[in-house]
Image (cartoon, rainbow, N blue to C red; front, side, top):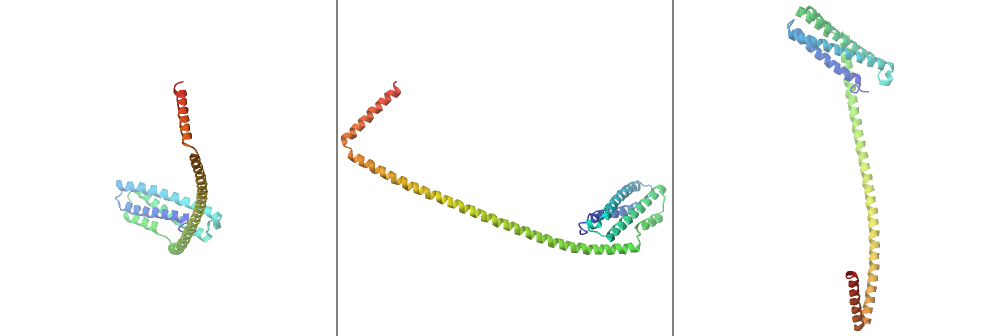
Length: 247
């Protein structure tokens, strides 16, 4: 797991930002007049922030203890665990020193500016070896982050290309299925049209035959027979009219 993705370094950066903000507030606190309302407000803010940071560092220590039970499962080694413990120890000592300085200033309310400056220098002071080690660790971490970032970027590009190819392949398959479906429907419609054309030809032939028969009957029938047929139909109409409307 890269440093950029490691939850420890994410929380560590957040805590470090809180510590930097705390130091800035402490510097503002030591510049205010003793006993002033602003100093009282800053004192409360510093003490509350110190307790919050100490709690966060304690929780981070607990995660280190959990990772120490099975370092290989978390992808870290004993050297990395030792570095993490040293950082939390230094952070706790730094915040603790600042907290003591604020409490001492609150109790005495008359500590000289030079004494407060000395406390601040003590607060900011770290062993040279730790500073070099932190510098080397940050440089190594930056290199690892760059390599990991480039590797992740390449993997992301490859994954995106694979996904695009998969989508293109799926689109081609869908288009092929649609083409086959259209082909089958065209064949079915062609079959229906062919059957309809056959039925129309057959019906046309039968109609022609009936028309010819009627023509032949009409030619054979005499004028007298036609008149008798008309009279018979008129009489039949009158009978049906009487039966329907007058009875």
